[in-house]
Image 1 (spheres, rainbow, N blue to C red):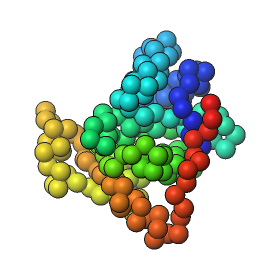
Image 2 (image 1 turned 90 degrees about the vertical axis):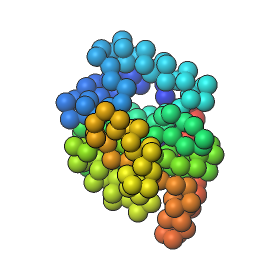
Image 3 (image 1 turned 180 degrees about the horizontal axis):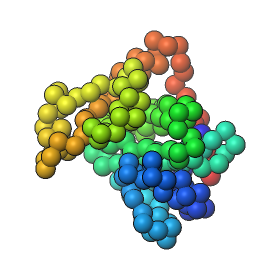
Length: 185
């Protein structure tokens, strides 16, 4: 389902990312394949330095279909960024990728809180986030962070996934914490 980012996946991922229904919502936009290759190389290097965590999302046949990343890691927390290619929207891949990623973040990498900033106009992403029983909208309770995100104009809603709430969700639903969700490269 997830694997570490590799340059060999860039061709497929770039084609998926440039779709007009996907591109506006991608955090690391690239205007050309060469630029995407460069950004991916920078992402791999930033992960080696501990600045972010990024994975390629795979379909059931092992083909790249999107990415999921934790950016701006500070004090055991960071911001989630994820995108899927248009042909994979609405098929459950987003939820599976997030579950696998959260398992790795919370139980292997020591992350305590995952934030999501979602554009107020991105109804698809807001609905997907609000379906998750372990996600809390924190526009009011994290007002300082919310105001930082919206310093120039109110663009984003802020959501939080705390490790303890995610763990409670797993326990309540009889789900196991997994230690084997990252494929060997």
